[in-house]
Image (cartoon, rainbow, N blue to C red; front, side, top):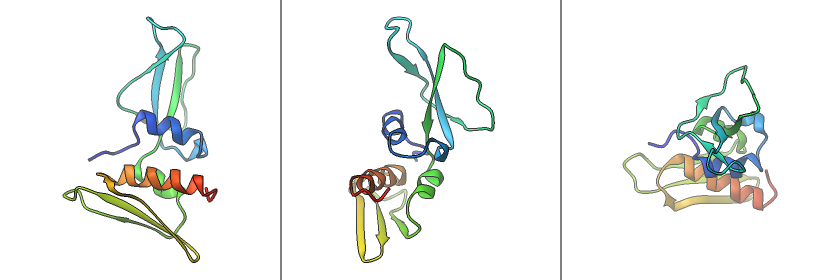
Length: 125
């Protein structure tokens, strides 16, 4: 089962969510072949209290399921199981109700990610 947002999702979320809400990070370094681009590792590291920066490395925040749930409104419900072929996320705010990831997310990370994008479009996050 997927445990954290992938690099593309993480880059998108970094533009939407507070960076402090991320509990993991990808480490990148400048590409030797294409110096204007950054290459990232496949597996993020858990965020600690101290991250060393230097001029050859850059960090991309990454979110676990717990961190994603932490940025959603309190009335959120994830529906699905690891055996299911889909997951969806339901979010209720007063009389408004949103669904995201239904039929397309095969894990809870992707369902939460889709919900965050939807709530951002609605200017709720």
